[in-house]
Length: 340
Image (tube, rainbow, N blue to C red; front, side):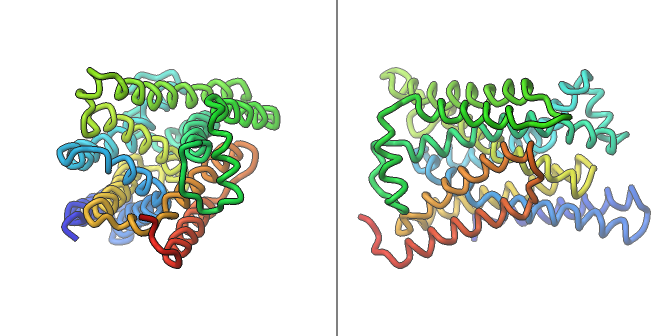
């Protein structure tokens, strides 16, 4: 339970700030309660939708030293909250609208409705980048000829055999991007979608593959021993990719960027605390299929992000997919003897 103390403290502070901001918009008890409600809903939404993120982080954190595991909270949370949940939307709006970062930040505070409109207008680009990155994460997990444990063996075993084709995940991802871009209707920019999707592919290759290459080098392995800075940065990049969908969806609940950062930040803190708790208790050691459920969730989530430029995907769908797949994997693990 100790791992959650900081999360509860942050939640209490965020709810208080949310009340103050709500009162500032509408000087009444109702306004304060609306501010609290916005923070609470966003925090719950982020926590519920990030179970797969927690499990993926758990798998990476196991390889890191205790020092870097602590920095996952002490360094990672400011990056996660201020960087991804506040600065990223500001920088994106600045890029799309041709504004300076300062002008975009001022727009967020002074004209939140216009800021939200610009942010939502960038949905296709964000979906392409995040969807491509997450799809590669999932495909590289399943298309792995070294993978020994299979949950849905009729599906995973043939997929694992294809792992010998090293470029297959990238090829599949690019094919999906091209297919979706061909199906895009009026009001969408297929070339921008492809450009940002290829950016997600490039980011994955430069991040993950460069990390693997460096750790494989004799001199660099000492630098990255126990996880190190490179693994930490890769972990933060994964967190950023998982949060793309949540940042966009948050504008359907409130247009206040500070409330969004607070709510999603509290959710991210609970997810990271949950990850550290699992790490400390080794909770997933006997549940061998939970990791599979998480990567199935990532696979479906990535496809939903990409398809969302064609049809509206309700937010509850992504949350329900995660609950069903991870819950199913947990139950399947519980009825099976642990794999030693």
